[in-house]
Length: 185
Image (cartoon, rainbow, N blue to C red; front, side):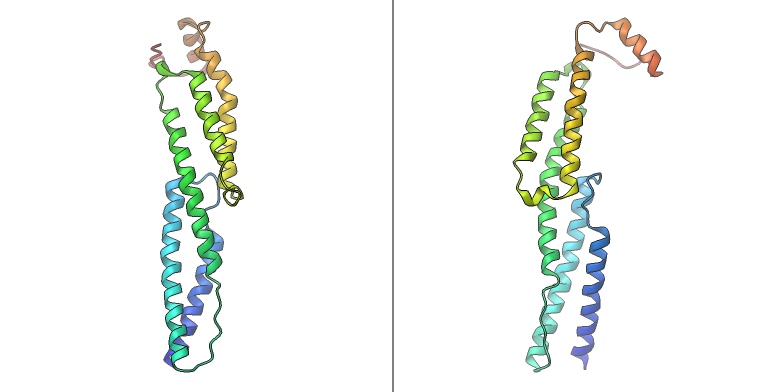
């Protein structure tokens, strides 16, 4: 009786975790990589514990010669967790490089090098396996990189020798930005 009751409890836990995973799996591209990886790690721990509980119940049912119908409902979730973990790990490296580019001081900006870096990041995403490309997070990163490539032309124009100090003052005035920004070249 105790094993049958425990079996029902574990089945309910499996159903709950499957439902929770469907609602909150981190596939949106706008998520931060560290938040997504944290969510994945939490779910991985929960699913592993429930899988262990299920295996114990199944072994107990076998030992007592009770009806046993094994199912692998958690296997697809574990596989998806591994895939998502690989995706977010790969994308976190790309996001960190994008963040480094954004932190570059204006005086040391070289549009050509920035374009090369962005092109390199974009080509590295294209080299990722197909199973990684199916997620929205992957598409979001690619769209972000394409947008950065488009804005690189504007960056080149702003960094040209034709833009003088007076032009910057005018630009700051129109944008209503304080003139305290230093434009050391």
